[in-house]
Amino acid sequence: MIKVSVMYPNTPGARFDHDYYRDRHMPLVKQRMGEACRYYTVDKGLAGGDAQTPATYLAMCHIFCDSPEAFAAGFGPHAQEILADIANYTDLTPVIQMSEVVVGH
Image (cartoon, rainbow, N blue to C red; front, side):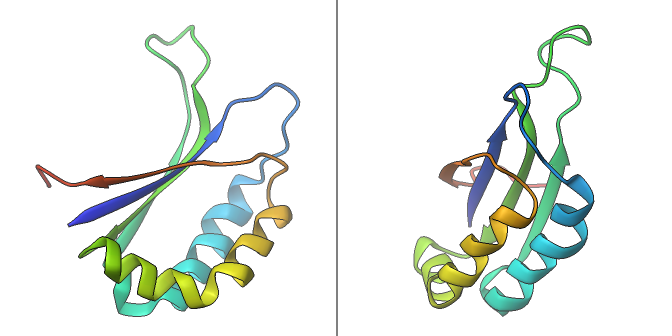
């Protein structure tokens, strides 16, 4: 299994609509990807290494798929629509990482 993490850096003055991201953008991603997206999670940054340190990322999502090929097959045909929707909730450029899930839940 792989995980595609999309992380939005905590940049001063950045715009990020957590409600839109959670309630509209990520359901759009899941709907377009269909079964290629096994499931996803959404995180809202609270703090860094201790409660007094700002979070490194304002928000993150993690999309779980069977393989890099499954992700590409599910995301690729809808990439333009999904990426265009980013402007509806943020002015940040996300950091993206694909990882192999070595230990799961």
